[in-house]
Image (tube, rainbow, N blue to C red; front, side, top):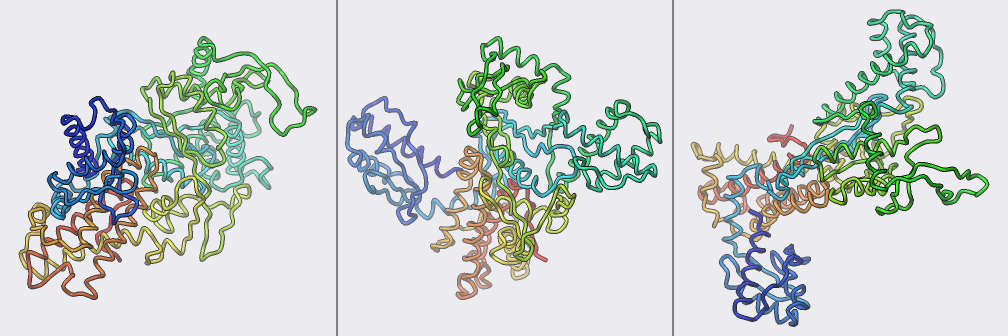
Length: 584
């Protein structure tokens, strides 16, 4: 149960009562009424702005409305107190019994606690990674992969029907470079001395197996042949080989996509022509001349007629070219067609996760989607800033040009997928992130994934110890849900329950904002509260989870910590991390 929804119902009932008695007028719009935690926890459990937003339409002072509503709320079941603060905020505090009743509810729901119907099973397309298929994934791809996958999990938790999609950029010039690089390795596999890798080709050794496989399958049939003979089959083979590598890399990180969409197939299908013809028919395409780019001297600018999309009519800074000088389509034209394809597949909600180097891309695509969907589709681009690698505090130097970059598999193999996934979400996606190999292996509070996993493992340690102390004691979830939770009544225990009970609201707010990092922050804070409660027992024996002379109190506290473990596991599930029951 979302306790904030519970309060929303209470405030709506209080408003209805007030209207029935003629204190407030009928027909008030309640859409702007919000329910959220107060900034200062000492003020109460939840707060509402109802009096402030209703004052003007009701033609009454906020304070008068707040005092009327607070008086009504104070009489509701489970409400301990209702007060007015500032210009008219209403703060509500629930009784301990209300919070204690949340524990068995959490236990019975298990990791499904926090599941929401907010998304109403609406379709949402989350496109992420979409790295060029020119080699194995490097560490620069990791953050976008994790953010996209965690966001997809979060949206599913919130009740959306999610499709995870990867756009294969297999139609650009970089694929011809890949083919030439693979052909060079093919020649090498057949015994040719290829010398130094020419400038402009991919130098990494990862293409050696591709060259060897080409030689094994085709022998010397392409040796000394012109590029027109071999480039098409080599291009396709090398692209497929690189996509196999990428899929394996992503699988090591626990990531799979339901859809792999080929840019090349998009062009071959005629979808680009179809989309641009549709845009032209709607009057969104014209022949014109763009103004010189900002900062470019007029003598360097050669104005020429171009086929342009009226992006500025839909919020972009300028209109955008759809064709190059040679008459071929721009990347933007293909991207428009790709998103049109998403729209006709039924996606009115699209999310794209990109690296920060694509920052100029958002406005033009938002404009395109707005035009294509008639303003019906929600489109959101989430940019991921760079990840800086450190080892013992020293930056790790890489050079993709020299082929000395660190791959995704290097990082996962060294520290594990759980650490990679969790730590990639410990900063907001648009803030730079430092990843220190030494820190993510450290068993301390500074290592967030360890700290959260340790809290989960401590619960299972307590359950095992309780089983040894009370032989035959039933500690399955059904039995713990029936424990007398009125015994869990200390301030720290109630505070932990309040925090756990806010998990459903966290799911909904994080999903609405497309911000999965909020889940990582929440889990860390929740684990911190649990560790503090656990450590109280070191100084005060009467506060320990296991009371050898009091089975009922032990069961109540075990129920509390079992509920905590379910919330942690539910959150880790969103992050794509498997909870640990025992630390080694």
